[in-house]
Structures are given as structure tokens and as C-alpha cells.
Image (cartoon, rainbow, N blue to C red; front, side):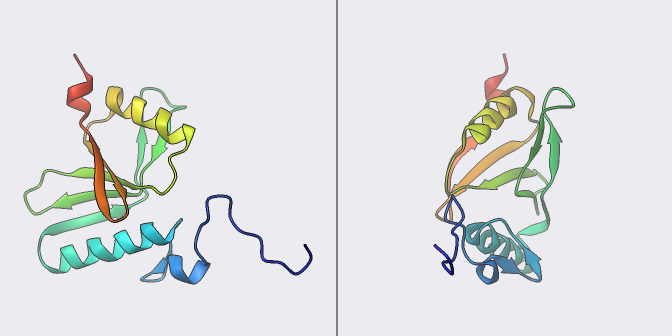
Length: 124
């Protein structure tokens, strides 16, 4: 075991692969998504995007940190989370988002949106 490089339990890429514009992201996929968002902003499709926005879901103890808050040119913002492995915590956060979120939550896997959680649909 000595001298062997330890891998992250979720197979996170090397540090260099997780950097975009000088920012270290949690995963290679997240860094790639930030690069995509920069291209969309340069093309005029986005006004802005914000990394690591925090949301309180219900009570002060339920804090969810998403990957991105995206503000498109049409002004109808959404939240994104780039996933490789869906943890139990994230499954809990999705349930809380359905109840307390205010914007659409888009889950990105493999560079594509695989799920959209619209909090309006989860409320009666």
C-alpha cells in the first residue's frame, strides 16, 4: 500500500482535470459544465451563472448547496446539480427541494439533463 495513490471513494478525477478558469471543482463533470456555461454566456444565451449557491430548505438545518444557479437571457432562472453518483443525502435533498425549492432543479449526468424537479409540481 505504501507509495500507492489513494483514490477518492466516488472516483473523482485528478485535481488538474477539475480546474476551470482557476476554480477547483468537486468533479471533472462539474468543471466541464462550468466550461459549457461559460460558452453559453459568451454566446449570449445566459446572462450569468453562479457557482455553489446555497438554499435553505424548510428550516435552518436543511442547507442545500447546488452546483450552479443559471440565469438565462429570458430571465427564468434554474438550479443545476451535476451528478455521477447519487448519494442518500442528495436523494433527501431532492425530496426537500420538491417541498421547499423555488426554482427548477435540473440534474445533469453525462453532460445531459436527466431529471428536472419542478417544485410547483410537488406542492398541492
